[in-house]
Length: 371
Image (cartoon, rainbow, N blue to C red; front, side, top):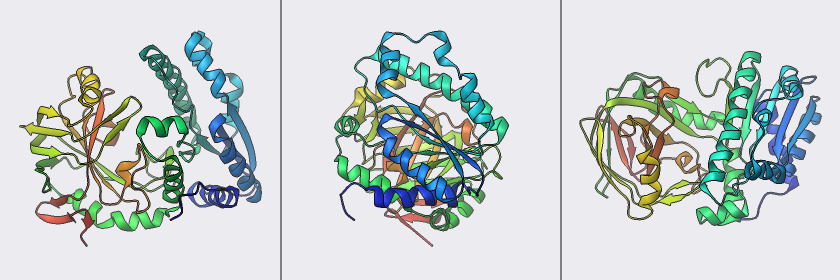
């Protein structure tokens, strides 16, 4: 696989494929493409792709310099709501492509708070309107790799861009095939056992929730699931809520957990009687502890279990859990996947090369799926 970033000759066919196969765009339909400064080349590609399919594209542009000025100098109250014209775009569109931003560029906790306050208000209102209209939407993360973010996460920018591109090309049907046997096991199972030579041995309970496969295609029939309104590209993960009162043993991560504020490495989480009773990190422990202190009452409960399904993802920041065969354990919030824990807090730790069984039936062996 080349480390060269994708050029126009590659990105336009991928944009057209996403519109045609993932969002099922037909001739005569309307497509709104919302993008930030860093994603303009991708917005051009989606506009070309929409026109080739006979659809009518409209591009909404968000200026990153103007947004950061808003963050740093205080946002007027009306800046936190959708204007009538953007509501009008939502009312009149069949599909929506969101190329997210802005590129991370914070220097203080006060800026971070303002950043989240503005974006969360926009998101909440946008989703309410979009859901009422039944809009087919996708969030495309192909422009997430920036020089500033690569520096924060400590990764090679060219490799990151190429990995996001190749990961986005993996077909939804291929992801579903990889997930099929695991979905059957997790639907019927009562308990999960995770082990590894690094000292991991953890028992989790299942609570009968339907596992969610995020395959990169829009599924309007899956009402109430995370994929019924907006799909995310690249994709490739199977997620299920676990029993919040069952967790016994130790989970030792061998991959970094990355955040906008940095990363923690070598997490070691010890659970007893369904609660996280001890935690430590080989590096970056303050990254975990700062958020954990403010995590609320359910911060120490197991929340979600996930398996990566994407063969082209390896170390893409914030998409590491999509790597095929990678196990991710989440604590905290799981209500959005059928669990009982609400709130905002959710933290994760990653494990490569694990053995996983469901009710003593092998699911993974050294990180490889067992048929």
